[in-house]
Image (tube, rainbow, N blue to C red; front, side, top):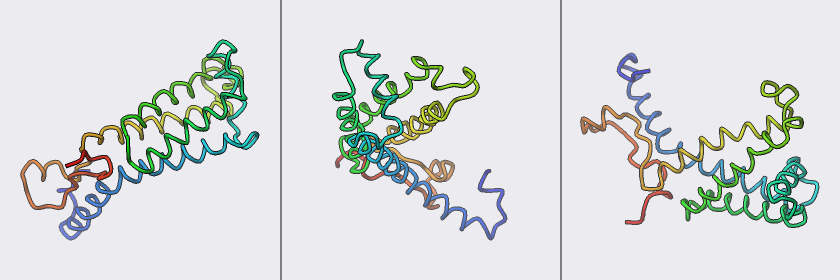
Length: 183
């Protein structure tokens, strides 16, 4: 919706809300991703605690040609995901963190191809609970893309038209100060 179509009394409220969302959106997204990765990664340190453990272990074993078993893959994956979570939570080393995330997500999606009988009741239309667990990662990938778009200091702009005109309307310059390059 174009903000100029709002009734005049609502315009200042809309400007403030939109600017606040632009300022907070990317940091909230980054922290939320960090919590998910740290939490799910930490679960894998405790055998039997993660519902994805067996499928993840079998996937890594298959991808490695049987050379990496669960006794190695689960602590490794737990560490990998926890590092992604910590990187996202701290906002430090974002390029390295996002690279780890991309590689992890590629691995996470492979069971859809390697084990379709376990990830779909009817391929490719009806995913099992495990399949749904994997497919929801598309949202995590999109969130990571948004966070990644800010590593050079960019951010969301609440009102691009106002920014182009150089008006004094409230707008968010950098939506994620932790992702901004050092001065």
